[in-house]
Length: 370
Image (tube, rainbow, N blue to C red; front, top):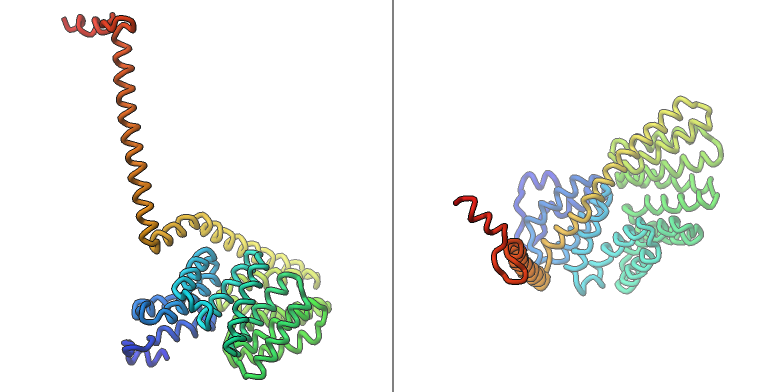
């Protein structure tokens, strides 16, 4: 596709530009900066009115990218715009991905009830339209959220259903994720050997899809299961493999997780020097991520305000102008009252209160020049 783009960068009339599909592929490959740049380029080559579904899908892609890079408030705003553009079509196929991403964001903010509600909406659409690929992706997300809720059995059930759908329909994109979510849930349930078997199969599937993010997750499942069985040397090898992939992909959240777990592993091996080294690396990365998050939060209100103002409707703008004019009128009245008050104070200071005749002060003002 990149070769085709170099040969002919101009899109065919009536078709979506190559940047659109490349953005989608780069997003799935975990190259979020590249995906965002391609999405922005595609926006400049598309017409929102002619292709609202494509425009909305691009916004979802961009939302996922900025969300994965940690810009949560920006991702939320972009996703809201995507759903607004879809309108009634949000209840059709085009709305499924937006609802799934929104569920992920709700889960990140620990609003699990809302997250599960959004997934139920998405699943109802997928069932009504018999959309197999979307159903597999929804089940994967459901398993992950159930596990975060602490409902392990529900997470296992959703992951098994996801794996069954992915295997039946040869869904190469979701298959490694199905293995990963099921493996993670089984580790939590104490089914360690079965979790490792599934994670190993997931790594094979991930090689086919070339998705480094899920490879990180699978190495972590393997390392965690081995750690729970106190097979610390084997756990160390798996965790280091995952760390290498996460570091190469600039996957900071998982790099941090690997640092912490490797510190625990080396501590269990009584290799305190390396345990301390990994712990220091974890603290350094955590501080960096915390600083970046703090900076983002400090700018959060300004960014939201700018976004809303840029996309506000005419009635909001009229209300804003009316409020401004009202405030300006009140300010003019206040200034006039202040001038009158100052003039009254000056008159009272220079005149007798009873007769209104000039007092000693005003006489002094005239006598001094004389």
